[in-house]
Image (cartoon, rainbow, N blue to C red; front, side, top):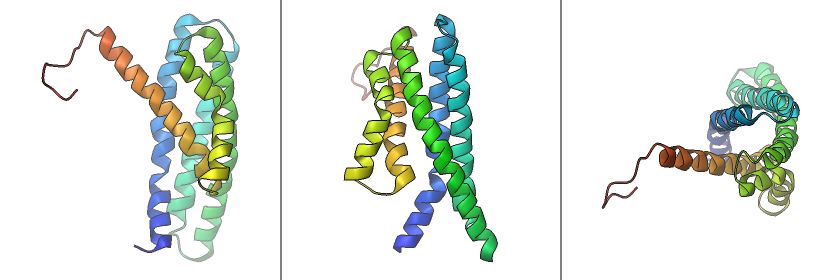
Length: 171
């Protein structure tokens, strides 16, 4: 597989990263609604959700649109990439704000709210040290943070439902 083909395959699947963050973020939002303590949470939630949707659409448009013939493919790629970059920046700042709100309301564990608050420095560190590809270097750490919160949510729901692993199982 050539480098450009690998890039294209990776890019065409990257919208799933945004898509998979959405249900985890939605669940944390529902946890906030149970506690309601600030009117900033719904506002921050709406910004985060809208930016996640835009980033997902921008990525899909850029990498799936590039297959269009001629100048249309280039235009779609450029438009989608711009939308993804701008929305991704908003996602990072909204996630940081969401971390601050979560920390104050103690809806999620402290480690999770600290990770959400630190998403921008972690992303910049990734951008500088691991890869220089702008959107993914910033978004991959973000997605891993949301995935770790998702794992916590699953473990929490499993414990609260009374489900226990069967003796001898790999769970």
